[in-house]
Amino acid sequence: MVGKTPTCHDSGVMKPFSRTLGSPWAAPCLLIAAVFCTFAVSLSNPLVNWDDYRLIGGHEPVRELSLSSIRYVFTHFDPELYIPLALLSYQVEQAVFGFHPAVFHATSLLLHILNALLAWMFLRIFLKSPSFALLGALLFALHPIQTEAVAWASARKDLLASFFALLSLLLYVHSSEKKYRIGTVITFALALLSKVSVVTLPLIFLLIDWREKGGVTMRDVFSKWPHFLLSLVFGLVAIFGKSHNLSSLTLLETVLLSFKATVFYLWQIFVPFHFSAFYEQSTPILLTSAEFLVPIALFALLLGAAAVSLRWTKEGFFAFAWYLLFIAPSVATFMKAEGEVFFASDRYAYLALLGIILAIIRFIEIKVPKKTHLGISLLLIIFSFGFAGKSFLQTQTWAGEEALFGNAVRAYPESFVAQHNLGYEYLKTGRYELAIEQLTKAIEMDPMIARAHANLGAAYGKIGEYEKGLDEILKSLKLDPEKQDEYRESLRMIEEAKRKAQN
Image (cartoon, rainbow, N blue to C red; front, side, top):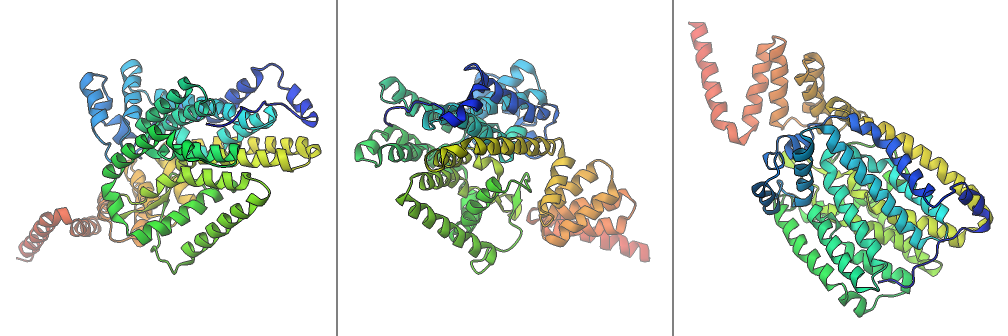
């Protein structure tokens, strides 16, 4: 619970900018229009073979809306996440509109627009200038790191969880009234039912208490016992669902990747280039590697700077703490199937970005001379346009598998998954020479992945190079622990065919 809600007003130098907004509806309408124009291109995108068909298109429980299907999504993981509200939203869409990718994308875009409006309302509470609040909301909504959450239909869970989390935050700053306190609990529960990634929200409440009141009392902590109870329950559920992933990495590897990911997201926020659908850890995870020593040193430097900045302002520490709290749950999601490790995903920084924007703009308000505010506002407008342009282009990289994996190869050519998946897309679409080229590159990066050899073997077979194809198929069978019987039988048949040929 925070103190009295601040009144939002513009300083004299900002009034010319503020007057251009006209009516009270101008700011939200401008925000809606900016977000829509930036991301509307996603409405023509298909679903992509990167979880979309597993989660939506080929997932029987979401293809119908019935008591049994609803019961299923509330009692099962999918396959490791507990996201019943997200799955329920897919059920409702398909029951009402049928199976149309544009519908899934339209819902995601609508949720992002609503989140942008909620972020604007949140910023208006804590910033003195409504103009700065609008600019902050634009930066939040248009930043290219948000593109994955909007353009990828399977990221519905992140948008939905963020929507309810932002509602809970807004209710919390009004929680002096009982109805608002109850509302924070209900919306937090709905957020957790969408995705457990917002499990740290009660700590964000305490962070806001500290920022507004200068400290946190035991009463502040105990007043949030329902929120902490929900965090405990859903946290345990999440750990149970991800028990395989949690056991796939050592503690040291997890810690090292956590430092790398924490610094990486900040880099993507402040230097928004080279975005990809996935960020693969393609090198060994070693403490002695500069790849991890540098992020550890940078993290320590940032933490120290945030602590030292408390002598002059709370904003630096607030931003860093907000960021860390929203990023923290993602450290349990590094390990994936078949030994592939992904250390980051853009959507995990969705809400983390908001606190950084709030702190930066608040610092400008209280520490930077007011005569420079108009110039800073113009600079933020330029950034917003730049973000919008980058997000518009990034959204188009989700326009199909070839665009998606091709972008990943261009951004991170050292990624086995990017090279392999692009090669597989070429194989599916009959471009066998390109498929062989890409799959060969993937195998050079990691020769121990069975499916890469199997796909390369299929590509060779399609162009009539049967001996090379057979060799790759045998390698695939040998590498797959579940297909050792088939491998031995294949060898036996080949030897038998050779003997017959010799006779």
